[in-house]
Image (tube, rainbow, N blue to C red; front, side, top):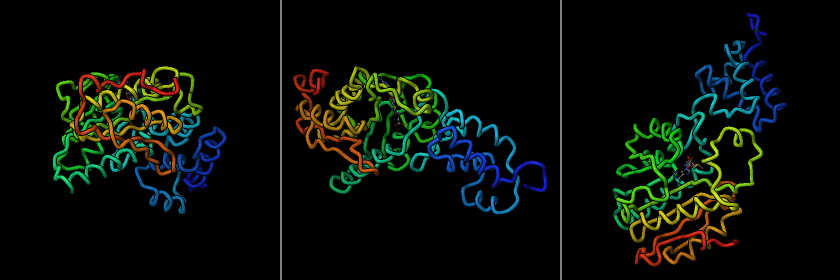
Length: 309
Ligand SMILES: C[S@@+](CC[C@H](N)C(=O)[O-])C[C@H]1O[C@@H](n2cnc3c(N)ncnc32)[C@H](O)[C@@H]1O
């Protein structure tokens, strides 16, 4: 106990850890500490130092722990999602960016770095289809000086969060449908990147944080196999890219073969490559728009070209 009436910070964090574990929160200790850090406005090192003394638990801590125990996402409680070097504002109505998507950004950065070294591409033009909070577009704008970055988002709620996050980074954000957005820029992008919705209609996620709090339009890709929007993103990449431009898309591990086959069968993409995330899972596929570029006859990627149908 502290000199006052309430529990010490260390006691409160231990109790919170037990409460969150009981509620089935996957990382109870981490979340208990992050909620305390959030209220105290300190980092982990300072929090641990405070826990060694007899600092009291911050006011309101039990209320936040109770919210988290109801499986409200941590990021909705703190209002912040950390993604690469960015602190993104998030809340209800927008998809919480995931760590595996940081690897998708890295693929874009690696490709751009090669193009700069080999071809002197110093001012690449990049678009993020289905930007959500703006995690991918914002990171590229932040980490690639000289890049012209565009972002497209359909949901008015997600668009509002993206606007808040992307305006300071100079990203050109539009509200639109990734199927037909930015037609006036056809054939001009060096990179098209997307983490589209891809979950099959019947595959409702187990975690309440996802099933109840990520917006459905961010999760379900359309169709029984969830492949409608990923297929549409590939079609848009075919029209938006310059010949030789790079397309990279995130997907579920089980979809990697479908996506690779779909891209190969279009006839407009070359160098189709599956990429593993940091956990060794096949979570992204890239391709290069064939140098001859799309033609009216071969630049359509339709659901007929999907496999496993
Ligand atoms: C899986 S979330 C990814 C968000 C963000 N790119 C990220 O990685 O955190 C997919 C996003 O695509 C948006 N979306 C869904 N359908 C769309 C469409 N037809 N056109 C544009 N965006 C769309 C959703 O609203 C959601 O923000």
